[in-house]
Image 1 (tube, rainbow, N blue to C red):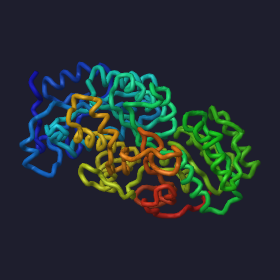
Image 2 (image 1 turned 90 degrees about the horizontal axis):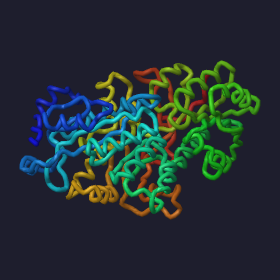
Image 3 (image 1 turned 90 degrees about the vertical axis):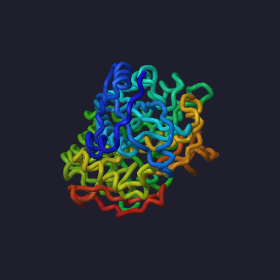
Image 4 (image 1 turned 135 degrees about the horizontal axis):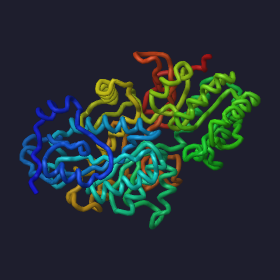
Length: 470
């Protein structure tokens, strides 16, 4: 089979603009991979990184022997309720194309072109599991990445475990990932790893934000009956025990299963005179809930949105003025002090590239790009890239600063396995999280100010919590 001829950086930029690789979705991936490799063209399903990874020595890069293509499988949420994650995936894969235009210099000292094989999860667990299987068995993925939802990440990770494929993930909670992994042989996953947030850190940020406004310390918790809501409702480490330890009075009559329950919950919060409302539910459901609060006249002094309710600016835009002064946790901001380990671009520069490329406001999931940084770092340290166990061995020793914060799996797991440090499990390191409030400011009608940094004090705050305005 004839090897693919790399395109030049000039041709690459001419064809794509700054970040314009052709990306695709779908099924029947195996045949398309073969077609791409034999014709040397960029197909609608495979994105090729074809020019040169930055290296300390230009001479070394030029003289490096050409290696085989490396395939990074991406389970992307292109359709369904999580589709906004897929839009962020499109951006970071294109950005990756301009970041390492000749490929990756592997630990074998060969220069390896990289292709992305992309499959749509459909925002469904079963579909995500099948997508991961196709990426390994049909596309020949050397490594899989996924993010955005604990259920789907667990489905992808389970497929990776079954097939013996390295898997990297982000933008989800670590506890469900670890708990699901306990069902693997030996009580721990061997192939799947996570850069994931901790509920303990998320709750610390919410409590730090609540404390900045004078209230009666009565908290109305409205938690959706899903993986995140159940996590928040846990009787041992969830919101009630954590908030109660800080003298908050929590009102949690049960988990919410549908929007038909909103009126009763809202009326109950008003009767209980809850100055603080904390709603943890998917974005679409939260939009309905917040509007219904306004219609029924519930006006808490502090309004928290947990989980992914306010993760995307499109949700804030849909809420309009109802989003003003809402608080939530954030898993990435342009204000964060981190940079891309490949290009050196700051978080602010990445946000600007995202906005200029998409015409949309930046969104935290653009930092899913850190998964590519992580993969590139691992490939660059792996001497035998045909040995997946060798790849996993290098994953386990990762110590890298990425645009989404430090990814460090090199140190020991904390003794208590919980809050004291950043390593709650052998295949997990915790990702940063801060507290933000959506305030009226800037080029867009509302923007998120960093108003708490309880868990990650190296991330500077940019404001303080303001009481809700009605």
